[in-house]
Length: 104
Image 1 (tube, rainbow, N blue to C red):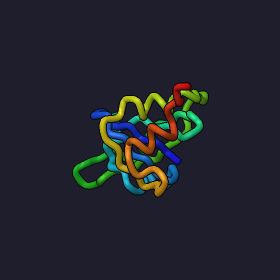
Image 2 (image 1 turned 90 degrees about the vertical axis):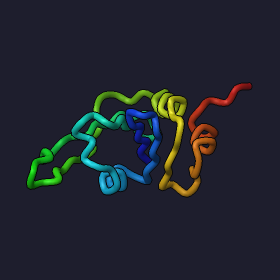
Image 3 (image 1 turned 90 degrees about the horizontal axis):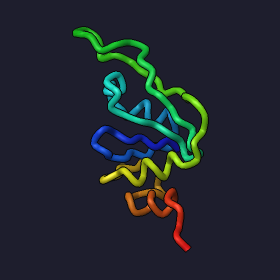
Image 4 (image 1 turned 180 degrees about the horizontal axis):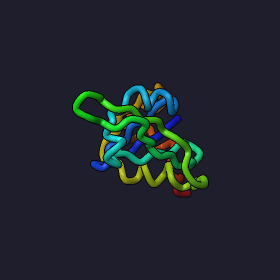
């Protein structure tokens, strides 16, 4: 599962890195998105072919740096909206219930 937070704090939840690559736009080139998986592994968009007048460009999403187990909660906390391609996480409330620590 890959969490994608855009610069407007909209959260997108994808089944996998390859699912995110298939559905995101090349705005990756502009630093539009931040990425992490459910374990807190950070990812970065790597431009393979820049957008030009004759090409829509290409990118891939690759792991970057060390895991931070608090990263998924940070993404969910910042989000104002959520679009999910994962059946069990259909709403921002579902994502918050899954990734934010419960208070006891």
